[in-house]
Length: 624
Image: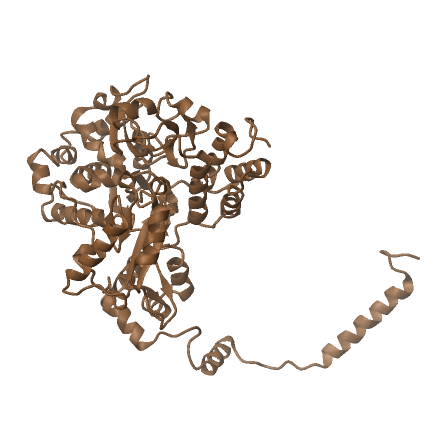
């Protein structure tokens, strides 16, 4: 007879074995190991010291001398990146003993500190006993600087500089109008040559009464010579001059309700102004969404201007910081933001000095009650231009984008509703309030409305920031605002929106440049960073340059972006592209990446295959 798949004899044997086990268990006596508290105490007695590497006394003293006394409620964890900067500025690098001591002092795990320090490009982590470089010279190898000979400059410097000076290539430093650019410690040198950099090095030595030698260069830390520090821009407008011209009066009018907040909201909505950091979300709608959220609410300002080819925010900030601050404060008042965090990219050393001085002036002579304002320093991570990654960095963590929903308007910094804005968007708020919506919306060309600040670089006679009507074409922009093409160059191609925005041929130079006009051609305007290529340049070289940039700057959080950008950069070096594989990579990156970096990275591939197939051995339809 079968029962559950077993015969009778098998069932009887199983029952007998069970009876035997029960008999043995009946004769066993329980042994007491102690109460849970006793067990925990025995473990504590057995361990002679806490788990993990313990801080050295000398390292603790070094960290405490930089951080200062520990507050009664402990060091704020969101200031971790600021503390890492302070340590590196003092010691020239981050030694591992200092990271151990910092973790102990901040009551954090060493892994938490190390994962943050190792994420950002500007932090140099060394083993204990290793000597940090006396000075670092970074040479931009972004597209505009590469067109201007950056690779030759890097090679020359690596062969010529003194011992102890580190020369490294760097992604776009936001000075494309004066390419190529070298940064000596914190001093940017535009249109740099070997002689210019050597002169700056010598000036740093002579400013402290020394002379340069091949064996003992002067250190840039803990206190760098003034010749190696970026000064405040000489054309910058201070608070006295700004207020003499009517500055902060609009803010006072809004705070005192002479201009009601609802009227300001309506003005922003009627103007049609969209976010000028790249995404282009309508400004008035964003204000209203955050304003309708329950308080407390926060404001985060994104000045991590890392898109290759973009330098408009730096240009405006250097010259008129208080116009930006007034717009920022009006936005905070209308939306009801209690605290403001300004996130500034680390490459903008002069801007940091400018903004710190402007904030000091503002807080010493406040035109009205001010919210709490904190200036935060980035650490060399392009991904932190993505708004949620910026918030992660402000909170003292790795700058990795968050999954959505929830959106940051609902749950942003520390889970609170957060209004996030690009610098330039806030820069124009005063004009909107002062002159009305029509002042902006009546501008424009070819059926478009408003104005745009174009960062123009590459093969033009007069590169720079060009304030022009929205909808202007590239041909009009070059002829009317840039003095034409540079001598010896004919228009061949252009990038309308920086590294992310794709590449278009000269045959499409009459397409209006604005939001939504370039998408039919496989591109977008983004931050309006226009890089112009001449007939001696190749679109494939430009595409490879930006793909290498994306591979270096991928945060690594999602596989499609992390692996896809690196694989694409390798494949794009071939004389004849494997178009099928590259298109597969492009589709996966575009469809499956978490944030805009991976989603936009395929644009240069698609544009080369579509518009420049002759350069890569592909047919016009993009297939081999």
